[in-house]
Length: 300
Image (tube, rainbow, N blue to C red; front, side, top):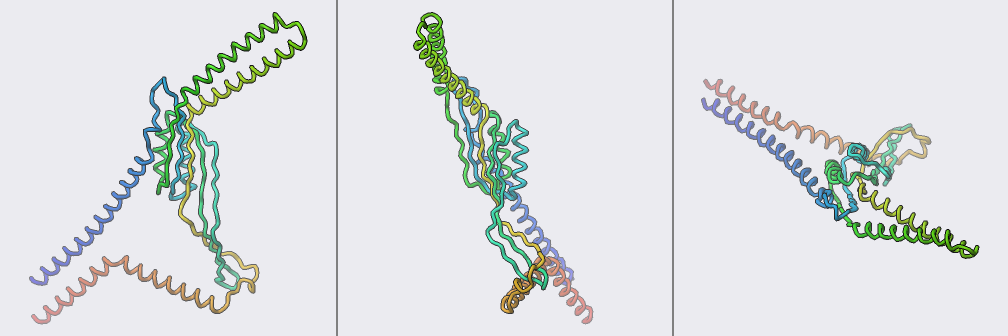
């Protein structure tokens, strides 16, 4: 009976350990979810929300820098989201920067080429003003670490009004000059001077119209500037040696490489057995219980 009781107690302890590990994993997943939600909340802003106000016109811009898991995949996701919400990409510069390149001789005719590099991308997108907050929240799903986010909402209502008044004045001046040319222009010099003045007035009026169109375009479509980056990456590939003598390391380097390789193998073995700790624990407990059970049987 004592043997059965001890066996039951050991089983309960093992189950409790396994349950605690599972609970810890669940806690980590919940923490990751909370972190993702908080990032989305931080990136979003009331400044990015379009308000129905006829008295105020805003030019909204956003500037965000953040780290992602994979720059290329996040870039494609952001570009697809931009098109989905009626926007377009005006600039993207995806590139890799090599920080270090190491060549290690692994055989007489092969060399291991190790490249340390980082991937970055600068993106500029334009989205409908009414969709700015939605697009920013969609982009936030790609964020692994936020460096900064700046959102601006510039009120250009008075600038639009000033531009419209200038256009009205130019139009009235153009009419007066045209009438003066038609009714009072007698001398060629007077006519030429009036024509030059009229041309200058029309050019100024055209500039005002273009400025108004530009302001309206910036009001209707917000500009988002993004800087994406990821952790430094490592790429290894075996390439053929061009010259055996050139790439052949000396005996000291070979010994150091051998020690490193042996250490990495030992680490792998240790990690492998650590991953098997539940089975080792159960097996050890079962072995001792079995030995004790056999001893009790032999005494009987």
